[in-house]
Image 1 (tube, one colour):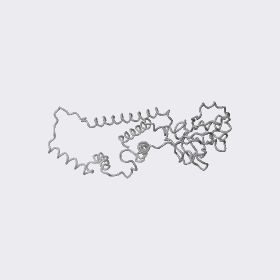
Image 2: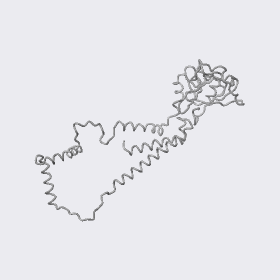
Image 3: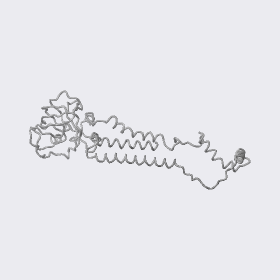
Image 4: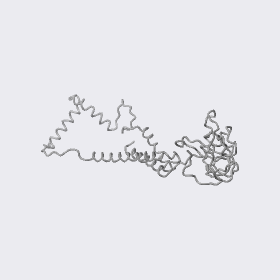
Length: 304
């Protein structure tokens, strides 16, 4: 791959990082704490590309500048007749190797070089180079770096959703804990209020491990996206530690909610059924729905 292409590719990669970090799209892929590192990485890429481009331009200008000084001393210029005689003598000596074996030996490398430049090939050479010192396979691999750039600029992949929850195979944040190390725990009481907004992860954790049953009889407000499977319909969120690659689902099965589509974002109010989060159901609580409100996708779709 040519240096010019490498520099352009570096600018595009750095620009893509800066774009998602500054417009908030990065929240579809990583946690908020990583925003400064994305900005720093993108800025460094763009800066390195700029330095490389300026350096290449200066080198090209120096190479194109005249480098042979003009001498002020008089130089004897051979006459046309002298030049012609010299050329004929040299040609004759080269044409008759027997008369001048030393010259024939001396000019052999030059002939081979001329043959190579003329398109000839050495029968003992097996190079698979492209003639410019680059491997075509490596160049093709480098061009693959354009794929994430094009995806960010043209497609902007959305955050993970219902498909990721279903592909988790029933695993949830609570079910991933070792059962021989988990015991019921006393949680602090919920804040006062007729309706308590709560994170999905907090609801699932309290429903499974709270020895005080602090959720019983309390009206909660949950926000998440809709997921369907053979057992019913759920409101769900994905919890990430670092990035979308380590996302783990947390969900509650909705009782009394109909006409909802997968990946549709909703806010629901209702109550958790007591003792519904059990090991047989991967500690997924059941939620008796009072109201359902459809909403737009939030700017930060994950929980942490």
